[in-house]
Length: 344
Image (cartoon, rainbow, N blue to C red):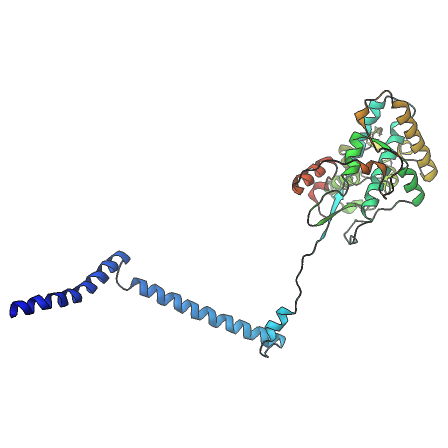
C-alpha cells in the first residue's frame, strides 16, 4: 500500500517540481530574477508620463486657440487641403562665357568684315534675348536685391530673332538658358549690382569683390556705365583690378589699369539702328564663311522662321542627362557662374 502510495505520489511530486525547474532555467537564461519585470515597470512609467505630457500639451493648445469643443481639433485638420507645390528658384547667370566664346568663334571666321567688338555686342544681345524669353512662362516675379527682370525693346527683339545661325559654342550657352528641369522651376536672373559707392567707406577687399561682380554681371543693360567707370581714374584701383582679373570683354585695351577703348566696345547711345547694322555685319560674316568654315561649327534651324516664340536655334534639341543634378552642374560649368557663391 505504501509502495502504491509512493508510486501514485511520484507524478504529483514531479508536477510540483517541473514548473519550478522550468522557471529556474528560464530565469538563469534571462539573468538575475526580477530584472525583466523592473525594465517593464520602467517602460510603463515612462509611457504614462509621456501620455500625461501629451494630454497637457494638447489641452494647452486647445485653450490657446479656442478648440476646447469636442472634435474641434480633428475638424481643423480635416479642413486643411494638402497638395504639391513648386517653387521658383532664381539662379544668377553670368555672361562671361559669351566673351570667351566670341573670341574663339571670331578667330575661326578669319574675316575682317566684322570686328570683335561688333561680334561681341551681337552675342551679348542674343544672351539678353534668351533671358528675356525665359520669363514669358514665369509665374513668380523675382523680388531679390539686385535682381531685375531683363527687358529688350520690341524692335531689337525682332532684329535678333532674324538670326538663324549661331556657332556651336555660343549656341550651347544660349540653348541652356533656363533649361534646367526639376520639380521646381529655375529662372535665370541677371544681377544688377550697384555701381555707385562711397569708396572711402569700402575696404580694399570689398572693392576688389565689387570689380569682380561687375565683370560677372556684365550685360547690355549696364555695360556702358561699367565701361565708363573702368575708364575713370577716380574709380579705385582695387575695383579695376577685380574687373581686369575676371574680364569677359574681348579686345579690351588697358593702360595703367585704365580702360582705353570703351567707345569701341560699346558706343554711347547704342540703339536699334546700330544693333541692326551689327546684325547685318554678322549675317554677312556667316555668308562669307559658308564655304570656308567646317559646317558642324554652326547650328542652324531648317526652313523658315519657326512659328513658336523662341528664336530659330531653339528648334535644335540637345540631349540632356536624365539626372537634373547633372544637367545643373553642366549648366553651371557652361554659363551659370554664381558670383563667388553669393546668393541673391
